[in-house]
Image (tube, rainbow, N blue to C red):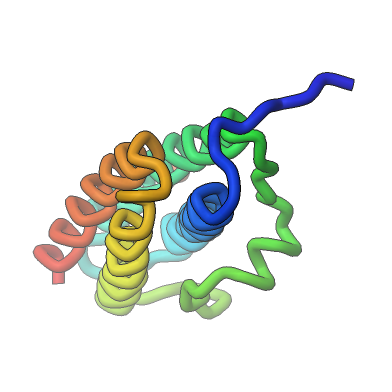
Length: 155
Ligand SMILES: [Fe+2]
Protein backbone atom coordinates (compact mmCIF):
# COMPACT_ATOMS: atom_id res chain seq x y z
CA UNK A 1 0.00 0.00 0.00
CA UNK A 2 1.25 3.49 -0.82
CA UNK A 3 2.38 5.69 2.04
CA UNK A 4 1.56 9.40 2.08
CA UNK A 5 4.31 11.27 3.90
CA UNK A 6 3.34 14.42 5.74
CA UNK A 7 5.52 17.52 5.71
CA UNK A 8 4.06 18.28 9.14
CA UNK A 9 4.46 16.52 12.46
CA UNK A 10 3.52 16.91 16.11
CA UNK A 11 1.42 19.85 17.21
CA UNK A 12 1.61 21.54 13.79
CA UNK A 13 0.01 18.51 12.17
CA UNK A 14 -2.65 18.15 14.86
CA UNK A 15 -3.59 21.85 14.81
CA UNK A 16 -3.68 22.01 11.02
CA UNK A 17 -5.72 18.83 10.76
CA UNK A 18 -8.25 20.01 13.33
CA UNK A 19 -8.67 23.33 11.51
CA UNK A 20 -9.07 21.70 8.11
CA UNK A 21 -11.53 19.08 9.35
CA UNK A 22 -13.60 21.75 11.13
CA UNK A 23 -13.66 23.91 8.01
CA UNK A 24 -14.58 20.89 5.91
CA UNK A 25 -17.60 20.11 8.09
CA UNK A 26 -18.69 23.75 8.06
CA UNK A 27 -18.56 23.86 4.25
CA UNK A 28 -20.21 20.49 3.61
CA UNK A 29 -23.09 21.40 5.87
CA UNK A 30 -23.24 24.91 4.39
CA UNK A 31 -23.79 23.33 0.96
CA UNK A 32 -26.58 21.14 2.38
CA UNK A 33 -28.31 23.92 4.33
CA UNK A 34 -28.10 26.33 1.38
CA UNK A 35 -29.57 23.73 -1.01
CA UNK A 36 -32.40 22.97 1.41
CA UNK A 37 -33.20 26.69 1.52
CA UNK A 38 -32.80 27.02 -2.29
CA UNK A 39 -35.45 24.35 -2.85
CA UNK A 40 -37.94 25.48 -0.20
CA UNK A 41 -37.78 29.26 -0.11
CA UNK A 42 -41.01 31.14 -0.89
CA UNK A 43 -42.13 34.75 -0.64
CA UNK A 44 -40.87 38.22 -1.57
CA UNK A 45 -37.64 38.30 -3.57
CA UNK A 46 -38.00 34.58 -4.19
CA UNK A 47 -35.88 34.55 -7.31
CA UNK A 48 -32.94 36.58 -6.01
CA UNK A 49 -32.79 34.60 -2.74
CA UNK A 50 -33.17 31.30 -4.60
CA UNK A 51 -30.30 32.16 -6.97
CA UNK A 52 -28.06 33.69 -4.29
CA UNK A 53 -28.33 30.48 -2.27
CA UNK A 54 -27.00 28.50 -5.21
CA UNK A 55 -23.94 30.78 -5.32
CA UNK A 56 -23.30 29.74 -1.72
CA UNK A 57 -23.66 26.05 -2.65
CA UNK A 58 -21.19 26.42 -5.52
CA UNK A 59 -18.52 28.14 -3.46
CA UNK A 60 -18.98 25.73 -0.56
CA UNK A 61 -18.55 22.71 -2.81
CA UNK A 62 -15.50 24.18 -4.54
CA UNK A 63 -13.72 24.97 -1.28
CA UNK A 64 -14.74 21.63 0.26
CA UNK A 65 -12.78 19.77 -2.38
CA UNK A 66 -9.72 22.01 -2.02
CA UNK A 67 -9.63 21.63 1.77
CA UNK A 68 -10.20 17.87 1.70
CA UNK A 69 -7.41 17.40 -0.81
CA UNK A 70 -5.14 19.63 1.30
CA UNK A 71 -5.68 17.13 4.14
CA UNK A 72 -4.64 14.29 1.82
CA UNK A 73 -1.56 16.24 0.72
CA UNK A 74 -0.64 16.60 4.40
CA UNK A 75 -0.99 12.86 4.96
CA UNK A 76 -4.27 13.15 6.86
CA UNK A 77 -7.71 11.79 6.12
CA UNK A 78 -10.62 14.08 5.35
CA UNK A 79 -13.83 12.79 6.97
CA UNK A 80 -16.79 13.97 4.90
CA UNK A 81 -19.17 11.17 5.90
CA UNK A 82 -22.74 12.24 6.53
CA UNK A 83 -22.68 10.80 10.06
CA UNK A 84 -19.54 12.81 10.86
CA UNK A 85 -21.03 16.01 9.46
CA UNK A 86 -24.29 15.45 11.32
CA UNK A 87 -22.47 14.80 14.60
CA UNK A 88 -19.99 17.68 14.41
CA UNK A 89 -21.69 20.49 12.47
CA UNK A 90 -22.46 23.67 14.40
CA UNK A 91 -24.85 25.05 11.76
CA UNK A 92 -28.46 25.75 12.71
CA UNK A 93 -30.68 23.51 10.60
CA UNK A 94 -33.60 24.85 8.57
CA UNK A 95 -37.06 23.60 9.47
CA UNK A 96 -38.78 21.20 7.09
CA UNK A 97 -41.32 22.53 4.61
CA UNK A 98 -41.61 25.93 2.93
CA UNK A 99 -39.30 28.63 4.25
CA UNK A 100 -40.31 32.29 4.16
CA UNK A 101 -37.70 34.33 2.26
CA UNK A 102 -37.13 36.91 5.00
CA UNK A 103 -36.43 34.18 7.54
CA UNK A 104 -34.15 32.42 5.07
CA UNK A 105 -32.09 35.58 4.56
CA UNK A 106 -31.83 36.09 8.32
CA UNK A 107 -30.93 32.44 8.99
CA UNK A 108 -28.32 32.33 6.21
CA UNK A 109 -26.83 35.61 7.50
CA UNK A 110 -26.38 33.98 10.93
CA UNK A 111 -24.95 30.77 9.41
CA UNK A 112 -22.40 32.69 7.33
CA UNK A 113 -21.49 34.92 10.30
CA UNK A 114 -20.77 31.85 12.43
CA UNK A 115 -18.68 30.18 9.76
CA UNK A 116 -16.74 33.41 9.19
CA UNK A 117 -15.93 33.67 12.91
CA UNK A 118 -14.69 30.07 13.00
CA UNK A 119 -12.66 30.57 9.80
CA UNK A 120 -10.92 33.57 11.34
CA UNK A 121 -10.03 31.48 14.41
CA UNK A 122 -8.62 28.79 12.09
CA UNK A 123 -6.68 31.42 10.14
CA UNK A 124 -5.08 32.57 13.41
CA UNK A 125 -4.27 29.00 14.46
CA UNK A 126 -2.70 27.96 11.16
CA UNK A 127 -0.51 31.05 10.90
CA UNK A 128 2.23 29.13 12.70
CA UNK A 129 1.21 25.52 12.13
CA UNK A 130 1.03 25.67 8.32
CA UNK A 131 0.97 28.96 6.36
CA UNK A 132 0.06 27.15 3.12
CA UNK A 133 -3.12 25.87 4.74
CA UNK A 134 -3.70 29.33 6.20
CA UNK A 135 -3.67 30.68 2.62
CA UNK A 136 -6.49 28.31 1.66
CA UNK A 137 -8.54 29.24 4.72
CA UNK A 138 -8.07 32.94 3.94
CA UNK A 139 -9.45 32.33 0.45
CA UNK A 140 -12.43 30.47 1.93
CA UNK A 141 -13.11 33.26 4.37
CA UNK A 142 -13.00 35.91 1.66
CA UNK A 143 -15.87 34.15 -0.10
CA UNK A 144 -17.78 33.48 3.13
CA UNK A 145 -17.55 37.10 4.25
CA UNK A 146 -18.56 38.32 0.77
CA UNK A 147 -21.71 36.20 0.96
CA UNK A 148 -22.27 37.36 4.55
CA UNK A 149 -22.30 40.95 3.28
CA UNK A 150 -24.67 40.07 0.45
CA UNK A 151 -27.18 38.33 2.71
CA UNK A 152 -27.08 41.20 5.20
CA UNK A 153 -27.73 43.58 2.30
CA UNK A 154 -30.81 41.54 1.27
CA UNK A 155 -32.52 41.81 4.65
FE1 LIG B 1 -31.56 24.81 -8.50
